[in-house]
Length: 215
Image (tube, rainbow, N blue to C red; front, side, top):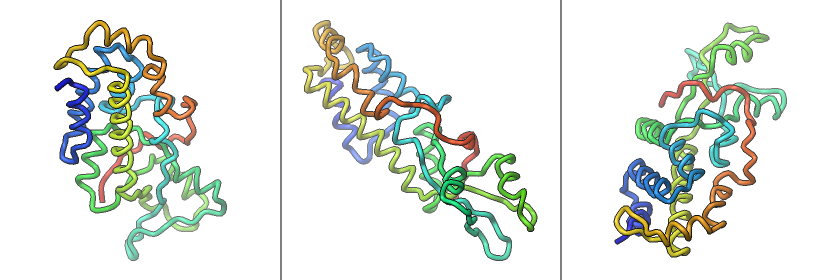
């Protein structure tokens, strides 16, 4: 069985380690000199340093902003307009797949993201009550969906390679296979499926560097 078929089997296996699948896909993309796809896989494994490189499924992730009341627990923060609410509750997810998997495993259904101090001060500056602990709360399914999107994109990619006659011999590829990849626009342009229209401009306010903790 070639490495492309091995990848297909691992991706559809619900018990497979997605980190190992990504590493194997990294090996394939490197050997086939698919530099853009190799870059995407490295970002998924290591985390994103630049929002310009984020795929569309990691952008505009919406949570619920809440503050901790010592008597009532976590309470929602009300905003005057939808635009104001979105500016504080919609972010880009920069964390690596291994980090997201760890958060999903440790959570009990929701994940909380602590906001930077400057954002918290901005939220409470006009309030008549003292500044309180404030976090952005996400349902765990939001992060599970990101992992599933990664798997789907990997599967689409290996199926495309197979359709183009690329299978590999163990972990190696023939000269003819490499030439097919080099001359195939559909393979070399596959990353447009991941990035949408390739408009990777930063869309969010600067909360993506906040620290995440599980609830």
